[in-house]
Amino acid sequence: MQQVLVVDDSRVVRRCVAAVLQEAGFSTVEAEDGCEAFEVFQQREFDLVVTDIVMPNCDGLTLTGKIRAADREIPIVILTSTADRCQVDKAKAVGASAYLLKPFDPEALIQRVETLLASTSQTA
Amino acid sequence: MSGQPFNISHTTPFVEEVIFVFERMLHWEVECESIGTKTDWTPTHFASGVVSLCGGFQGKVALSFPARLACRIAQELLRYPMSRVNDDVVDAICELTNTVTGRALPRLSKHCTSLGVPEAVIGRARPIEYPLGVSPIVVRFRGEVESFALEVGMIERALAGAENAAALCGTQPTHGERNHASQIF
Image (cartoon, rainbow over all chains, first blue to last red; front, side):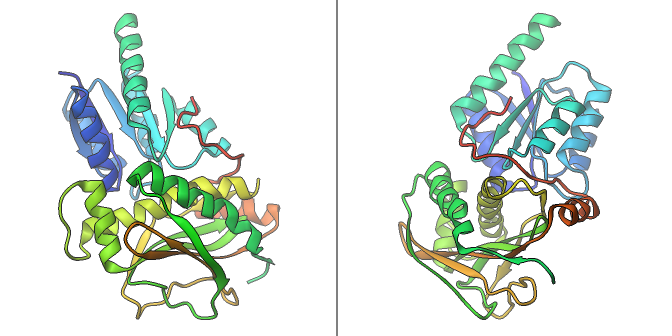
């Protein structure tokens, strides 16, 4: 079963995202900020990461940069509430693979996750 | 605090995003009931999610709910019963407020505005601290169970100052156009 790391400071969002992914057949691990997420990321193997941006301690863009430095291939999906151009540009620059807006459409999330995982397995 | 008073017409993106976000996240139809201003900073209802803004717009945006409605919202999102305002309820109303604010702000201006991490004000004894001299705009919505309120209290600052402020905040500036798509790239 493919493992997804879900990172958001909101328990509501983590639970909703995890529930959608689990229903689609993925296994999920949750973290509530970038610091906790990176610790977990270093300890376990994941196939994909879904992260918010605005979080206390370590934000999602910093987390994305750290994960990308450690793993050039893993798909990283940004799931946030603002479609701000500066933020989108920063997300691309630090290596995000996709940028989705809250409130998320469950089908769109699953479709994007599956597409990213399929393209990763093809390049592996 | 210097700056242009917030124009009441600027509440339109917030009102539209409240309707959209409630429909998308909760599958609830809500409608705007009334709009006005208030002179005190007492939260309209018992449980309020509050997002601070810094930069092009400075101030606060709040969604304020009666306790029972706040519990019902968390119950809908987390799918288990809630009878009192606990951490999950606080989390749910903060997330709703954050989502509405994050979506509405880029539609208002190309000025950079940073969003703070959302916080909750529980009870009506503690005020929501808007910028000095600001009379918050209050939009009341009629919902599935009870009415709730959107409060917007902010001032608009000049772009140069806004970019400086955003840099000082160290958080994400916002600017852009309306976007109801769920995927940017």
